[in-house]
Image 1: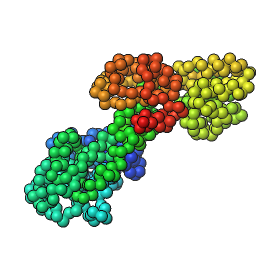
Image 2: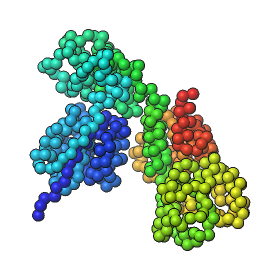
Image 3: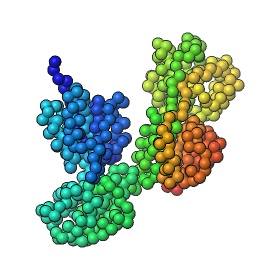
Image 4: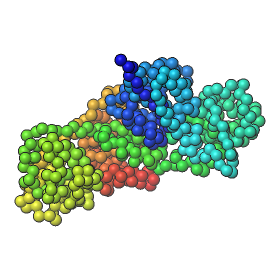
Length: 503
C-alpha cells in the first residue's frame, strides 16, 4: 500500500495588516487542513482558514519558543506524510529572517511537494506605513537590511558606504546599535525612525537621530515588534506619515453585530484607522420546520405583499422556502417592500427586485410608505425574528390589511467565556475602549445583559447607535448615545462617528 502524500504551502502572512496578505495566500489558507502559524500573524488572517482546519500555534519570542524549530520541522513533515494539506504561515516574508529556508529544506528532503508564497515584507511595508520611502532619488539609491539579534562586534559592514539601513528585531539592542554606528563613523545627526507594531492600529512612530533615538523610544515606551530605519529617508516620516494621520487612528471601537456581519463593519472603521474589537452581542439562530411555516408555504399564492425588514429575514425566509422545495419563482407577481439597501441587495441574490423602499430605514418608514398605498383587504407576509416590535404589523392591520408575521429566526445572547467577559470589563475600566457601536435594539439589550448597567464601568466610553429606535433602547438602559446615524446603515454610522471625532 503506497504512503499518502500531502503537500506543504509556505505562506508569508505579511507584516501585520490582514489586508496585506496576498490573494494566493488567502486562497491556499482556505484549502489547508492544517495551519501552523507564528506569533506575529494577525489573528484576523486566521479567519481565512477553512472552518475545520487544525490550527497549531508555533510562536516564538526572544529567548522562548512555544515549539522548537526541530518540532516545527517534524510537524510539517509528519502532517504531510499523513496525506494532509499543510499551510505554514509566517509573519512578513518567510525568506526574510524567518527561517523559512530551513523549513523548506526539511520538507524537500523528505520528498514532500511544496509551494512557496512570498509575503509582503516588513522591510519595506513598515517604513511605507510610517511614511518612509525605503529608496528616494534625492536621498539614496540602495539600502541594506540587518537583523538586530545578531549585531555582534565582529560585523564588518561599513556604514559610510550604506545610505539606508533597516534593522529588524533590533529594539532591545537599539542603544548598542546606535553606539556602534557612531563608532564606525556615522554622523550623530543622521535621521533615525523607529516604527513599532507597523501596519497595525497600534502603530507608533518615533523619529530622531542616532544620538537621541534610544532615549526617545525609552521615554515613549515603544514596544516590540519594531523596525528601525537609519538614513536621510527617515526624515520624511513626519511630513508623510499617512497611516497615523487617519481620522480614527488611536481610537478603539467595539462592534457588537452578529458574528457573520461584524467583519464588514469592522473593516469600514478599520479603513479609517480605528482599532476594532469584534464582540457580538447577538447570535442569529434559524427557526425551521414549524407548523406556521408549513402553512405559509402552502398558502403562498394568497399573499399580495411581502415585507422584509432585515438581511436575516431575507436569507432565512428563502431557506424556509427551500426546505419545502420552493424558491423565488413562487413569488412572481407579488409586491416586495424592503427596509434598506443591504436588504435589497440580499433580495437580488434570489433574483428579486424591490418594488417599494422607504426613505427612512425603519418600521416607521414603511408605515409612511404604506399610507400612500391602498392596503385595504391586501394580505401581507412579514418574515422576521421571533421577538420584534409589533408596531409595523399592528399599524398595517389598522389600515385594513390582513397581516401574517412568520418567525424564521430568533436572536440569542451568544455564549462568551467568563475569561473573555472579564477581559473586556477590564478594558472598559481602564478606558481602553473609546466607543461601542449598536446596530439594533437587540445588540443594546444583550450588551447590558452581559455587562450590567454600572455607569462607572462605562465612564470613559461613548455609545453610537444606527438609528433612533436603537438610541431609544439605549436611553431606556440609562445611557445617552454620543452618535446616532441619520440614515440607518453602517456606512452612515461610520460617517457620523467620523463627524463626532473630527468636530
